[in-house]
Image (cartoon, rainbow over all chains, first blue to last red):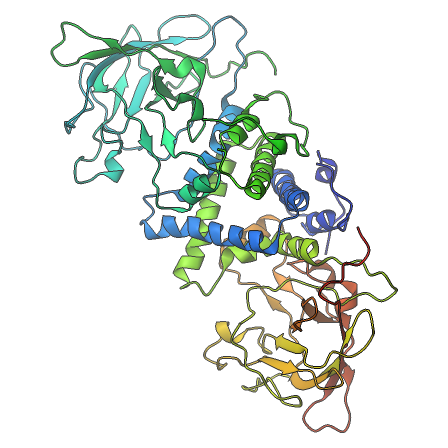
Length: 311
Length: 311
């Protein structure tokens, strides 16, 4: 049944301790048939090799393996029992740093000039495809929060190469309310699409709207991901942040997050999504009776066909 | 928040391609606090390192990562929606070879003599703690199956070091019926504990009872594990087998499986649990009107404190 070994067999291999059957992993890989796509052979081959190397490296015990089996079942059970509003496998990969790593792999661009495009950061589980378009100068605050501090957020979206503004670029923003919860999680206090909205940059590439100063929050503390954080003696906090996704048909989109510079969780964000150019300064605002703070944030997008310097 | 790096940071590392942030994985590991047990630091540190190395090695795409997230959620959903009778995460680790590898890590003994203890093989998801004790000479067949071929199975359980029999050793057997299903999976045709039973070796270390010639079967073909097998162009078949678990308080227990020598799936068992000394010869039986076949199988157990040769 086993086909001849293919290229993947020779892919990068961690050294395998010789005390265990040195042919076993290759035997498992060789049961893959001839109708596997080349990409699946590479990806699944590497995954199996790393799982085996992990087990041999730590001499994984039967009890530890069974704990892992129970853990994986429990992750999907949360998804099922929450009515699929809580994506625990997504959260799990976030606390292991995997989403941030995949984001880096997908979006890393090394600029050919001194100017870099805006860094990306993970999407997270709370983006909604249904956020409404709102007018520039409007607000995403549908439901006032007792401790919410209103911010006038504005800036210019511009082209990495030419430096020119990008009229019509879409600035999609979503954020948790002052209680640290998104509309999905907080139906008692928030109407659908509270603190979500899309704004279209004007002819000068400018956007502006009102939102809240962001609030740090804890990941849920009742599921398997939190149990894993506890095993690792890690806190469940995300620094305060505003999510944005900036798109235009002729540019590479940028999904990212912005963090107040004085947040205490910046260096230990539980999902590892902080990058230096995403740490921002909210300043006091005078003369606008709608907001007490201001955030001036410009976004730089790379053209769709921009490749940058090779790695 | 991050403690100083500990020993695990210097553990075996796969080469990390340098095109991505070379400090990222260490940063994730360093967020572990000081109250992690040393074992958890090693195991979870290695797991995170291998997950990251896997993602970098194959340059995992966002779509592939999201497919993985959906897959993990789906695995636990099967467990939840089956009323927990179907342990999909266990099955998943089996088809990736992980249970067989963990079994090898736990049970590998290199004998100091020419005689080896009976090889172990994976427990699988169908063992029951509730199997009844039955008398030697009895049968585990409670519910006759239309195509079942009855086997008289017998043998001696003996000590690896002295060669002497082990009176009182418990021989626990379980098997699928002729339709390839265990009692758990087949309540229409099978009563609880059909084809399960424990036998206590007599004063000469001997056991004997009636069972069925085993039947090859397919893993379920309706869940995420099967989808993964299809992606790998692998069949879902297990060779025909009889499960046994042989125990005695003064010996290392042996959980294993026995396979008829002419089974077509021996070399490509979908859970990789076949070993040479577990392939057996069923022979024709004359003069016993209860059975048409015979299996003579002796089990060799290592004393509890036996360490064998060092690896």
